[in-house]
Length: 380
Image 1 (tube, rainbow, N blue to C red):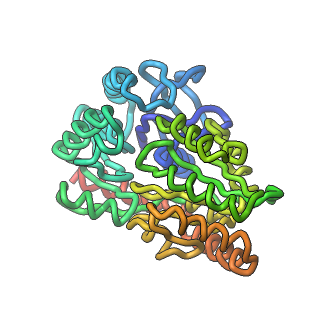
Image 2 (image 1 turned 90 degrees about the vertical axis):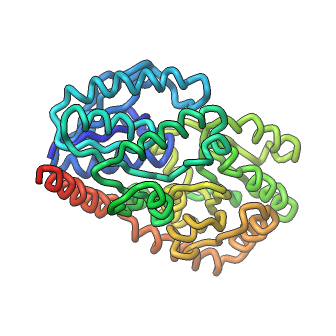
């Protein structure tokens, strides 16, 4: 097969700096599928990136205006330009099937498929109809329009990242919705790394309101009254950065909280391995790939008790599911794990066993089968 994967953003070079789960899925899928098939990735241009780049036997084409990963209102016009250029460029490629991985790339994939008369696949990390403005501010206007338009246009195949996403999607589309989760590369987290001397909680998340990181910071502030040497690491970027920094200063814990962004993949993995507990109190989640990756590194988790988290953790195997608005309960679970060695070891072992159920190789094989069937059905 000749496969075209479309992702609004995609890492460049050897650093593999993923801005989120969409890029991670696109990368690992391309890497595995390229072992047997011809794979192209069509994405946005980044500062200092090449227009054409080869990596792991697949080819990346970067088109449109140069942009940083900064999904704000000011980037709406650049997104529209990217859509137009990507559609025109995609029409020139010799491919058998096209896969879009978010609301912007769904539209691009559909237009390319119509022009080339090839099947289009919509991979859905989540369904946000009716919640765009709440979750994403003014940019949500474009997101709401595009998502509704994509669902109206329809696709030859749908892939949902979770059963929860599939349930939302079924309200808007007909036909079969395939469920394929995200995965983890076990080898990435097998390298031994020395733990931080002080007990450290790590969170990997976009810094947006719906990620609810204010609860995590409140929980950590409470934890430091009982565990004075504890540290918190927050990895990510987004519009809430200044508000979160100000919150740590107001709580007088800013010296104990470190913020990181734009880390290389190697540095991120090392940071996860060096930490002790993973936490994510988000209110909205399509899957939560950072939870599974941290679990693979042996980190027990304390995350929000929402439907998707219950699904991907099989009901809380390897950690704790907590009311996302209850900062004290988050703090108490942190303390339980960090003070009880037996509990920590039990949860760590179960977290690693949970992560073993998510393999990029198996996920790529399942996706490959769906692509093959989608092409066959379209030809018939």
